[in-house]
Amino acid sequence: MQVLVSLGLMVNSIKFFFILILFLNCSVLNKKNLVLVNAVEENLIPDEAPAKYYAAPIYIPLGIIGGMIDVFVIHPIRVIPASVNQTIDKLWVSDEKGYVTRMGSIPFLTIATPIFFTFDWMFRAFGDKNENYEDQKFNKIENQLDYEKNFYTNLNKSKNENDKLKISSELNQCYSKNQNSGFKNFETYQLLISVFKESKSDPKFHSEIQHSLIHCLRTNEKTTYLKLENFLFEELDENTDHIQIMNLVSLFQNFNTKESSEQILKKIISPKIKSETRRSLIDILYSANHKEVIDEFESLLKK
Image (cartoon, rainbow, N blue to C red; front, side, top):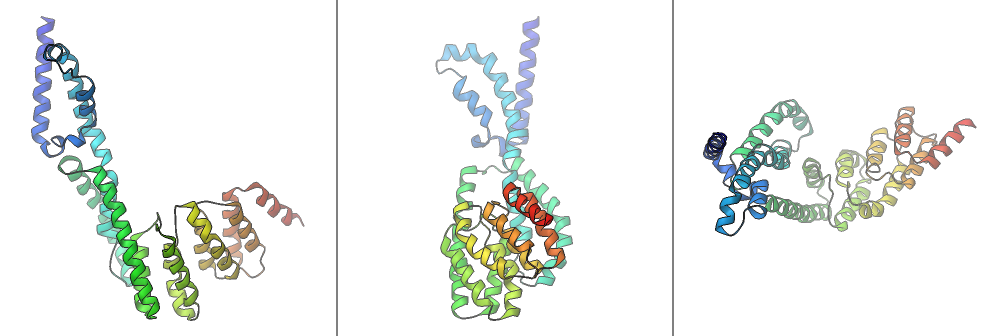
């Protein structure tokens, strides 16, 4: 009797699982999305026919449970980064150059973002039969390299032609792209530094592009950052404007080297900066947590 009940439950489970397959066929029929099912198939199902039949009561329930976890847990989690990137690309990366227009659209984009993300995520999780994580990763790298190549070419051309409008446009696009991971080739950073230095001949233009240009200097590669550090230190030393100083210091915070803390301390004790700037720099100095530099600062306070 118990055997019959068990068989009945197994049959009902199989029926339920196949109903799910019919309902979610796009997501489930893609073998690449079934991590646990593939693991069961590769490791628990015997090759020989008699053993395969005897092992069925083990691998069938495990396959069903694994399939449900794949469909409702693993696959939906794996597609979150793709939905995040799609939401940013469609809503936040804009060709609109106007600062006022861009700022005015932020409230509407903020409202639209969770709605767009939810629909995109649901489609990828339960309706996208072509989700390919390796291709996504490769395409992301390839697209970044293509963007960098085009950015370098266009910015260099605009610089040589002294076309300030196009320079500003390229830097705004770089800012909108949110290149937090940074560029791959250091020549791109050298070009940005060159544009930054040459723009100083026109203070108004320099002020206009400074924020977006410094944002474009961001990098997640420490070797690249260390090559940029001397330039950043020089600019920090020369600057007295609160916003420009904060923009420059923001580039230190990915790596928080001792040398950058020493430069911040040097700026803190400068009589040329505003008290607002000094307070902000002190907070940053303590958050970097280089004990020797903090001790030096505290010893100066006692004098």
